[in-house]
Image 1: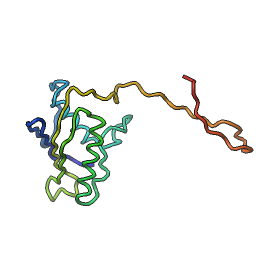
Image 2: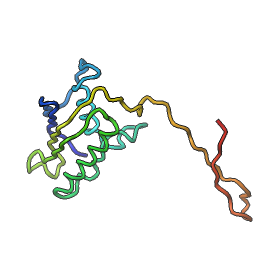
Image 3: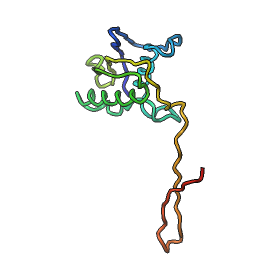
Image 4: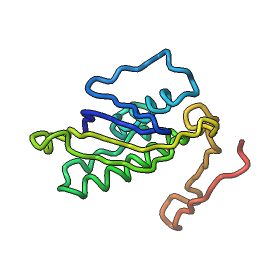
Length: 159
């Protein structure tokens, strides 16, 4: 798992910097740049698959042990993929991921700097609170005695 020593973001000419221990600002307005940046930070720092019952949330940091620039490039892709799904109001223009210092390179402690455009009028995906999509039901039909091969088919019209 990667650890962010610092997270910096440039949004609309204003720079936001989080160093060390991040604390949520529960007084941040709902549709504000600060709220979007908190969401981005949380998405980046949560390892993919670490939340019970919500395994698809977070960023894939399994690449952290790869050498050199490969980690930086792959991490940029992983950050973009996670944030585009979980915070669609943010559009990344630049991502720079660097080791916090040479002694922490192998420990996975990084500095992350982003340049963003944030569109507060964009609709948030209903990933968390939206109704689930239709469920596909499949069954194995036919004679299961072994005399004929079973048929796998989709069941329709049950709901």
